[in-house]
Length: 124
Image (cartoon, rainbow, N blue to C red; front, side, top):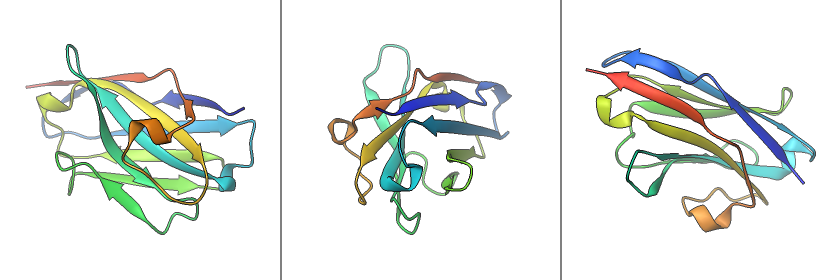
């Protein structure tokens, strides 16, 4: 079992930045591929970013490419999401997810473990 705890959400202005972190426990962190998803009010949960087990391969959703960066620190058992140039449409609850294996995935069903989410609100 893997426990994931997100932090770093809050209120930001359009054009600003936030950095989300997700701390993992319960499994060897370096054995996990990781991802971030988000769910806006009244919408389906959508893929944001993913990173492979070794950190060498990353994927991004089209709406965040060039603005968000996913990274991982295997020594600290954390995965981070640096969000720049925020837009009001980035407002959502952001979830950290983990899956056993090497390959990162943009598919929600590929992930075995989920955090509780952290809320991000971007004002215009």
